[in-house]
Each structure stands twice: as structure tokens, then as C-alpha cells.
Length: 489
Image (cartoon, rainbow, N blue to C red; front, side):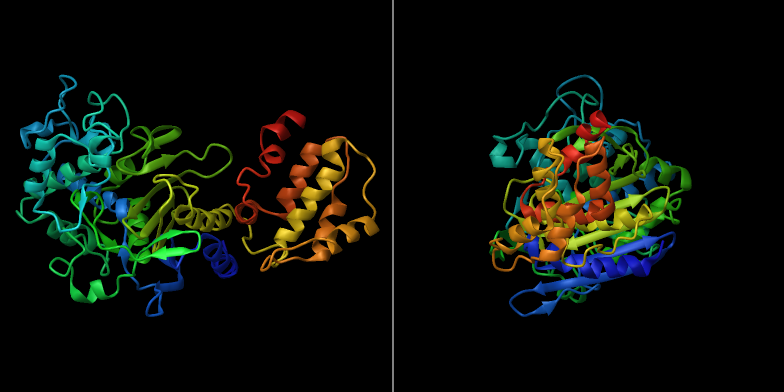
């Protein structure tokens, strides 16, 4: 795998992705084996001052921090201080009211404690110490989402279903704080036993992202977060997460990629190889913030994807921090490749959806890196003519194969279409690319299969994904490349 080809592809595509998604700044790190292979940054960390996004810019990891908490807890398991299947009510007075079985650490790390979905118990002031915060939360017995009107605090019996719970991971953090032999706070324990051994010098896991809890040098490197809508970027006031072991960490993509590489490579000294393997292999059925999801398993904290459908197996997670940051992690387990993407953007659209701009930017970048991991040259095939080329393929299909017409439009007809096109300002338009693509589509004995092969040959998946977003039709090409092709082959 040529890392220089990937770097060139990122330089080609990322500015275009950011422009399309309205992303102020974006930072990327790729690690391979035991080394950081690539780190790059684009755009601005602060729009008001023009401060650029750099590879040293720090940002909130949001829920990607849950894996740090998971490692800290598993270290206590390895030290014999708590068992994965020990009832936690031996240490904390927390009991699920929907049944007799006690909650275990395993249940918490796989989001199967019965606690319902919650958003982190945010406030405009830093939270109290973790013990006091959790005492208040469990005494109230109410989810924070819309004041408890959206989801129940307790959603069902222990082990019955996957329910993504920030409170549950906060409980894990409290166990770390309560049981570590040094008697230090959760934040101090993670610093000494996770970050320091891995050389994560730009990472901190504070109670709050506030001068009282974060070294000034690190806080000065934090990006400004923006809540976005198309054409609008809002610097909203600082908020603080009460369930802070679930998402208050600050880091750089390179630091977080080092952490992921350590787990992919057998624990990196912070976990034993066996425990690290457990963390990144399926332990139970998994899902998303919205609930269980078919085809997704969960290890300990990490989502686990088996690579079905022709891909390679990988682990993944993501994070958001209100109101202005998104974080994305993927680690290919067989290839030992880690990808981390940080953006100072959180879209104000429906929360939890993967298609909104702040998530789409990272996913489009991940498509590029995925192509590279799979051995495809990710550099652009058609310079900036991809949209014109795709338009030609679509027009050619509509004029021939889709309607079963065997005669193709003449070169003169295609030139007339292209010359008469009304193109919006800023949209790249190349007459030659349009005509060349339209002329390639023809009726064959197997038109669906042959059209699909043509699209895959000329517009690989990562390039097509961006073009589909730009055209505003995310489902474009599914018929050619999906069930329709298999049925028609």
C-alpha cells in the first residue's frame, strides 16, 4: 500500500468534501502496524481569527473517549480487582428494576445493562465529582433527552437488548475511580495508565473542558466548534457533559490513532493480548444510538463489523460533542490500519443520523482510505471531470439501456446536449467528459451487469460516493450495483 498515493488522494478530495459538507476544519491520521503513516489537516480551527487546523490541533473526541474508559476498566479486571461478570452492586448501589439479574461490568461495556439511551447529561456549568453526579442521576431516574420525554431511564431487563447508554459508561468510570489501588480520580488514572504508556502527550480526559481541569497549553490548542446548517456556522456556548467518562476527552487524531493501533496490535502494553482481542471482537449483538442494528456486533465498547459483503473486517466508533465537533474512528483488524478523523462541525439536523453533513464528511474521507486499504489506487480517475462523466453515464443509460433502445445517440446529438446544458454557477462542466461517458453506454446481452462494471471501472466507490452526495441523490447507482445487477446477471 503506497501511502504517498493515499496522501495525494486526500489532498485531491478532502477540500472538495469539506466545501460540499460545509466543514470549517478537518484533521486526519492514518496509522499502520505500529507507526503513524500519515497525518494531515485542512481548513480552519477558528473562523474568526483564521487560525488554521493543524495536526497538533486538539478537539473533543466525544463518544470515541468511551474506549479509553473501557481500557481502564479492563486493566482492573486484569489486576483481579473486579471480574467482567461480577455484579456491580457489590460496589455501587445500582439495581435494574426490570428483573432479578444484577448488572455486570460486561453488561455495561456492551451496552446491555438495561439503561436506556441518554445524551450525556450536559449542562452549562462543569459537573460535580462523578460520585455526586451519578447519585443525582440515579435518584432522578429520568433520561436527559427532552427532559425524559424521548426515552425511558430504564429500558428493560439486564442483557435483554443493546441500548447505547452514556450513563452506563459513566458508571464504568466510577468503578475505575472507586477500585483503582492508587485511589486517584478517574481522570488521573487514565492519564497515568492509558495515555502516558502510549505516548499520548496531547490527550487529556478531564471532568470538564474548562481551565480548572485542562492544562492551559492543551486548551489553547483546542479548535473552535461550529454548529452548522447549509450556509450557516454558529459558534454556540460551551457545554459540559455530566457523564464525563463517556465523552469529555480531548485529543488529536494522531494520539487517538496510536491508541487504536495498540489495541489492534495486541494491547500495546496497556492491555494483555487476550484482553485486547476481546475488546475488538464480537461479544454481543450491537447497534447504533437508535438501537440494535442488523449486521453490527459489539466488542467491549467498539462496534465490530465482520467484513461481510466483500470488505475487510474492522472495528469502529464515533463521537460528537455539542455543539460543534465530530470524531470518527475505524480500525481494520487484519490489516492493522487505524483511521481517525476530527472535524470542528456538528450539524444541527436530526441527531444520530450518518447522512448529515458533519458525519458525511468523515464517511466520505473513510471511503477514500477504505479503497486504499483494499488495494485500490484512491487517486481521482477523472480529475475534476467526475460529475460531468457521471452525468454522461446517466444520460447514456436513459437514452439507451434503461428503455431497451439498441441504437445509440450520435456524436452530434451528444454534443448538442452538452452544448445546450444550463449549468449552475460553480458546477464543473466538461463537454468532452460528458460526451465520452454517454458514448460508452450501449445495449448488450447483459446491460445491468455491463453498466455496473462500467461504473465501477470508471468511478470507484469512494469517488462515486462524493458525486452522489454532490448531486443530492444518495441512493444513485444502487440499482446498477445492488440487487438489480445480481438478478439481471
